[in-house]
Image (cartoon, rainbow, N blue to C red; front, side, top):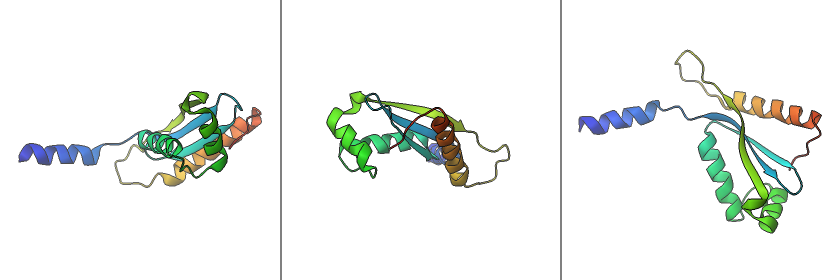
Length: 114
């Protein structure tokens, strides 16, 4: 029983990587950026939605339907570090701000977005 409690506590303390990921078309070179407090889960969710035709970005979904996953590159653009103090903090605003910063940077380089 102690081992089970220990594992639950370890899981509760886990800090998933958070930040911004991109899905970029190899054909149109357009970017879809998303900021999330859990990069792995966010990327998995986006791929799942695209594979099953339910992604909220209809233009991205259309291009995905036409070419499939092999026409896209998924990558982590930037990760947001956790605060040094171990207080519980909601990082959602920071992640959205980081996403906005990357959109601006990429626009200056001439990128277009979904």
